[in-house]
Length: 298
Image (cartoon, rainbow, N blue to C red):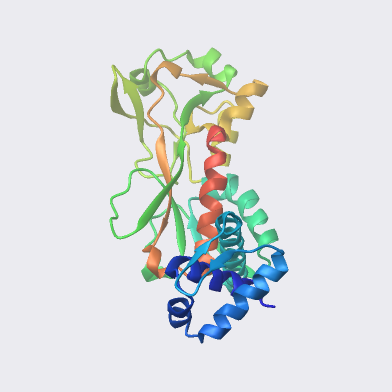
């Protein structure tokens, strides 16, 4: 007995209220439909359908079992679909992300994805310039900041908060800036890995305000920039996740906390949904909830 086939026949008979119409919709002969129903009733040891020469109707048991059996068939169908998709999840995915995101968030997320899908190969390129996904052959990109590319699908995965920090020794030596405008009197550590490296944003009187900064030390790596701040070389503005541990340990102190700028959105970017392969779609469906769960750490 093919249980799923019998359930499908039972569903059609209940819907059509006729053996012959159910047989027509299933491309079967009426005797085959009757046999499937008889086998299902025998297997369940209950009567599902009351039959007369002119009509048929579901018994009370038939009505109850129709819902249960339909749910079973839907679940099995979904399991089969998932198995088929799982078999298709293989091949190469090319990902690009800013260096700071790639260093901090991606390793754990992608390591877990690889454990689930060991037939998937990942090629990750960390760079701070804007990448043209299609032209450069990338499947996914992570971008920080407000987007103006309407040709891509964007899924928000968090918001990056920034803090302004320095060492206690630097502040004791050079003084504490009271407002962002005081930064003009200080050595600011310039992060050339980001756009507008010498323009730092702050919230002043409720408005986002850009402050021009300058300094004698420039570096294109956020980790190095943090290390220079710890080494008393100046003031840095960095993502919270880079400096929170150093603030807790006392290696750095946060300054200008009353002027913290608005966080920048972080988005997962990819071409239109209809162009996604099952493999890329699986990674998107994994990364979005995973990284959203990490929001409190950003």
